[in-house]
Length: 521
Image (cartoon, rainbow, N blue to C red):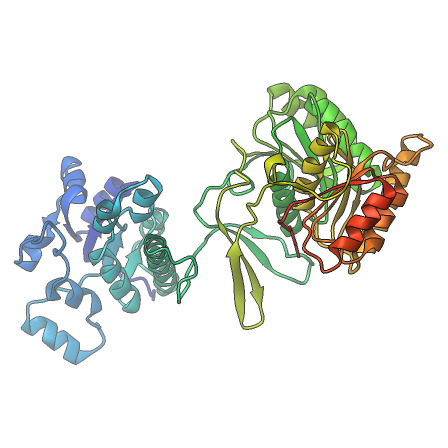
């Protein structure tokens, strides 16, 4: 005995016709009646698959430019009627409603229309009504009806010789997820049209890209979902080699790639535990790699490497000389790919592009009982937006390093202190409860990096320093001055700004205010 139900009558209306003809021929071979509309019916007829127009089945023509063609009792009664309910069967017989055992529907391409820049009227016309109604009806009555929303599901029905109870329940769940995502996309579009950045009810959806081995820790489960935005990065990446990416790999790789996209010159970012441990610009990626690695060669071990240029062999050979978890780049030369081939466990990701650091977007964080939503930190400082607040103005070289350091600070966990010199970080202090502690750690890191490089003088000497938020007291700035920094960039806005400015003047430092902070928690 089997729980597989045969398909005696199927309603098919799909925009994605992958596998359609093969499935239609299979249904016809089973003796099933196929009901269809428009382009789907045309494609089946051209393949010599017998098909009956829905309007012929219902006795009611398509009206209102096709807006109404399946919203009739002959369709929804045939889908929703329970086969184990005598009253339902009697009413179906009374009204000449034939049961429908399979519904295969793709929705109008609303998301694609929006993505292509369709105008208001085009987007409205691509909001499917009949499709979601049929999908939801079939999913509700999945005890008797199988609902198909993805082309891959067609093959499973053929392989089973019909629909099994487990399959019908699984496909029903997928169907509700699909209509929920569809409605979420429509709601988000309408909110945008109305200028509602934070609408009263917020819905969003994702498509599972990968079930991960575990989450941050082995006792946590995790999955990687795509939101459909196709922002260049881990969502668009092609994995050239290496074992499967973990939760922490994905999180850290995203942090590295978003950071490296901030810079125009050839740049390298090395990330460990979501914090940059080395960032540098250079005339080439090769040069940038040497400078980024110099900042913290110890932390770089087992880290994530991101570059903002096509990866060449010279840089790849140097990167391959140390143990790294992931290398991510927009593209790579064939010989660069070959250089990594001997590192079998290294994941090499090629994204096809760089994310725009100034573009808008939303980021989310779960909290107990809900989630927080905010706009992406797309703020960027430039020379025109800086205010010199000390007696001494920064030199052109200091100014370039200050802007570089503040862009790095945006990607370092708060409290963040960055020492930089000649377009490269030379000390990073991250994630401390006290800003002065971050200053001291960054200075200590600079000294350690100098010793690792065989230098007698700390790398912080002659550097500039960036703080992601204002110095609440002069002690953090004084720690930077003691380390050898010559210029400071910070948001300003503290009640003690005058005290901090006076300390900078006393130390002979140049200092600029940005008026913008970059907290990152």
